[in-house]
Length: 355
Image (cartoon, rainbow, N blue to C red):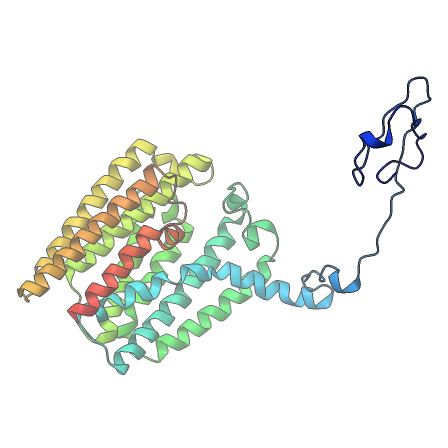
């Protein structure tokens, strides 16, 4: 009978009349009283997998001599922190956008200034990691850095630092000292920061903020224009807000053991300072925007749209810092949040319309 296991004993014809079972419907195995139980097992069949359906080979990183050759350049690139370079053109190009300079000569001047500060910031990153590699091993967020993890030897980092400084010196030599002094002051200030000032509470945050003010000044000098004091104050207070937010995150993550300067902070103290910095940044930006000579209705509407977007951006950053637990890396906090990116798009559109 179809569907009945061939190994089971057939049922007697008297127990199931042929008329009671419809034709074509399988009858399940029914144990017969008194008969030994028989277990049916189907033989397992292993089907070969066709070569066309086999999994593709997994790409593996290069091994052997090639991997050893690429290891050092990759470590040097990570040491240079390329994701941090975006803040240089953003600040340096700000004066060109505000002054409505859109010529090819302006673009070359901004590109030159950006290249100088990018090289200078790389030199500062390398020097800081060389001096702090022992402390960085104690910080979960920094222990993966090339020097702290042992991926890169200190000798290779010192050699790389010398090459970067030589390239920076060549870039400064292409212009007069009157236009390149901000990057030199930045280097001198960060040299003092690396050896001493980063261990002093409050001073460490101000040094970081002043570095961005020097970037803005470099942007003005590259155009041959005088800087706006209100814009520089806006940059100072806004960057103080970001620097203090980073200190707050470090204080929550590792306490005061990782950096001596953190011992002079507390979470409550930093919260007060961030609120003051946020207020000052909004006020100084408002004064800078409303001091513009153009009082047409269109310009006034765009100015207040810019100011409103800026205030919202400050509120959003405070939310990310105080509620969302962000702020460990200000660049990633700003560029990975959709609302902050949206604020940047609005700013770009407003400045485009104003120009």
